[in-house]
Image (tube, rainbow, N blue to C red):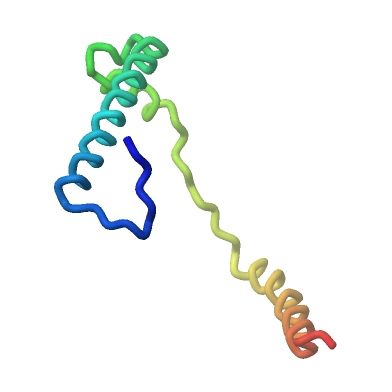
Amino acid sequence: MPRVRASQELDPSELRRYAAVGAQARLEAIASEMVAIRHAFPELANGSVDDVTTTTAATSPSRHRRTMPMRRLRATMSPVRRLSARNTSAWPPV
């Protein structure tokens, strides 16, 4: 297919033909990727992912965010605030 310069305009039928050729090439690439994936993961060949996802989800630990006691939070934030105030008072650097 000839290369089209950006300055040239395509009529809608020609643009649609190019899009169809690109879509066909992409479908062929996806099909080859599917073959490679099914070869790498034979348990997925039957189309059922439930067995794989339930075992993975059941074994993953739950994430729990620990909170800091207010006393320690205040003790931590006080020096940070002082440092921030000191640094912003001299901004912008000369």
